Amino acid sequence: MNTQQKILIIDDEAIALQNLMHVLKKEGYSVLGTQNSTEALELLVRERFDLVLTDLKMEKVDGMQILTRTKELYPDSEVIMITGYATLETAIEAMKRGAYHYIAKPFKLEEVRKVVKEALEKVSLKRENITLKTQLKAFTNTSGIITANKKMKSILSMAAQAAISDSNIVISGESGTGKELLARFIHASSPRHHGPLLSLNCGAFNEELLTNELFGHEKGAFTGANAHKIGLIEQANGGTLFLDEITEMPLSMQVKLLRVLQEKEVLPLGATRPVQVDVRFIAATNRNLQEEVQSGRFRNDLYFRINVVSFTLPPLSARKDDIPLLIQHFLQKYSASMKKKVTGISPAVADILTDYDYPGNVRELENIIERGVALTGGEVIEVDQLPDDLRGMIFKTFRRTDGGGIPSLEDHEKAYIQWVLKETEGNKTLAAQHLGIDRVSLWRKLKKYDLS
Figure 1 (cartoon, one colour):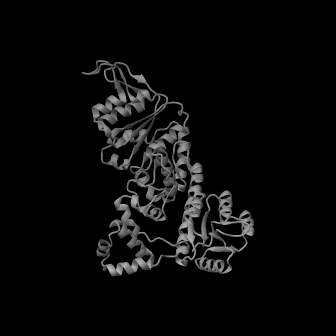
Figure 2: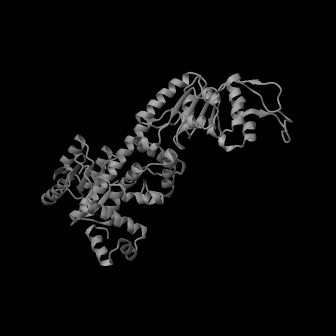
Figure 3: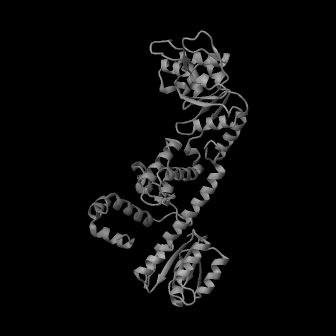
């Protein structure tokens, strides 16, 4: 249990107060109680409570006043109203003022445990989101690279140093690790930042089109060349040219690029005089460039010309401490673009996304969050909004309880039954078949775990 979470209970009935305090202390929470509602207001001013349980009808200060004052002092704390005078009007009014839940007396202690646990989970989620938003500002640079990872921060530090020089650079890493983002960071940190930054994927064109894109052509150079075209190398003059997937460049094209690097000039197709250029080249590849040289697929002389400084970006599976920050960033990004108020992910989703290895790296995580924001109808992304292959991981992930202990077999059985019921859309007969038990046994388990 989480002893850090503090609860204030206010009830002028001594027996009800003692029962609630006893039950919640056994759950491991830090609990303070009072029968005096005026004293409760003083306690609220002196210290912050994560959750307040208050009776509605009390002398001097009633529950609505307690609710209002709590929300004024601590907007991210939650309040649960408890009363023996439950009416629809008071329930609606309490919810309008921000109450988390409304419990009528006489109540079941198991119901109180459940509602308290859910309320505190919401408080934790809100505070975690606030923390992550603060961290995002600290760990986001002007080129959009978000990281708190030591290795990534070391790479960024070295990249900032390399940016000051005019050396050509090679960035290696798996697809989706952010190679182009690092190239943008280097350009923005360099003396060339006032100049253009242009990008070209070398694997997206055949040799003829690639030559035309990079070098351009004169009018009439070939059939259909009705106007002069300036190539990307010339357009990038005074700035940076980013060549993605450079190992996809044909060997004959590599010879032409090598000449540009050596002579610092470019000859457009059909031209008779070369054009002087001042361009920094940053190349990227998801392959091992040295192996490409050894195999003869990449020219050795071009390798030494372009690979003056090199960086290798780690996969997301090697920088999992960045996952919460990235999730928060993508939540903000897609909530804004879709005009939705999605503020977080459920604890089960957090466990799955932390445990996952991400073969598609940061780009895959972004797609997962974009999908979740698009599909959720609430403020939190749930397991149901994850792709099918990830939803199954909930039962491969051994979630820990609030205090760090390993969950019991019953905890996993309950979670599994819940998942099967969702998959069968509440069809108990079909759920029982998938679980391998009869309907009566399923009914007993639903009653046992309060899942009815």
